[in-house]
Length: 201
Length: 172
Image (cartoon, rainbow over all chains, first blue to last red; front, top):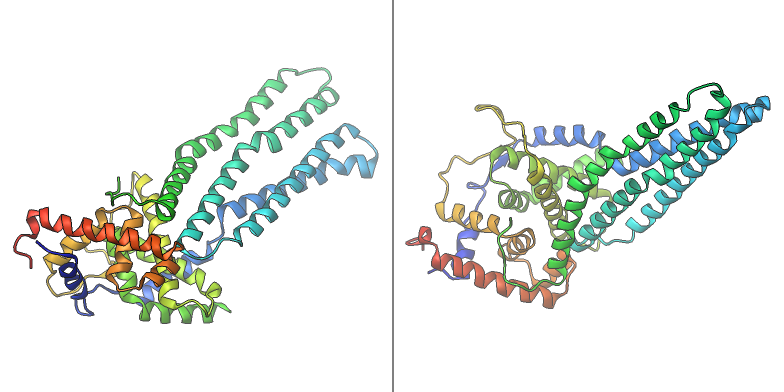
């Protein structure tokens, strides 16, 4: 039977000769390549959505403001710009909150859990801060633009906008929520857990 | 800090803490392609963290924090991947195995460590690498007394495994 000191001796037997070597230049090239594409997915999403909504708002404002017509576009412009402001303020809050976590393993886990919760919240809110304003805008616009037709356009647009949420919901259920739950479990174990060591599943 | 400085720092950290990083890789990944991938992931996280490193924190502590966190995140991601690119035989690997024949006892120990969950695995690595309870507490962000309780359980668990595992018979 080996006690822990015996295991320590085995561990300490590792030396330069018995350890793996690595190709430093290849590693540094890989770091260079991958670091150029490092930008948080959440950060990209926030910036792209905000810019798209600002662009949409400006486009919708152009005719009412510059040509004094198509005033029915104003509510949708207001909603697009309002949604952009909402996303930008959420982003500022997120960045401030993330800076408060410390750099220990526990702090990093807490930060990851917070980031995942933020991303889930932003995704779940998508129908409210994006789809609903767009839908209201289309509802207001349709009678003016298509007065002789197509009320049938409305359910198609509605279906299309709501359909955007399907992949988002799938990502939340299949990826984000399970990962968040696992990290929360690890975090609890690190901070509090005093049960016997278990093997990972 | 500009990019060149950051790259130089990374080279220095990789050189000085090579053993620590490779032990983390071996404990969290077994297949060669996974070890390559994890090692790259850790190197990238280390590179990213360099500008944030503060003088008051020992480099070893900092490196452990980054490496263990990267490994834990990587292991969560890898569990969900169904299809991975399989490295062809003979293709170049980032990590090069030593020419010396492997020590079966050491392989066994790494296997036992890799079977622990991520937190106990991290603690075991810190313990075996001789970090003090205070250093472990700083690395993990938990109290020294909490570290002590967990370490005692892990020691009993690993000693118990070695007593019951027939593959360690005669491995003294």
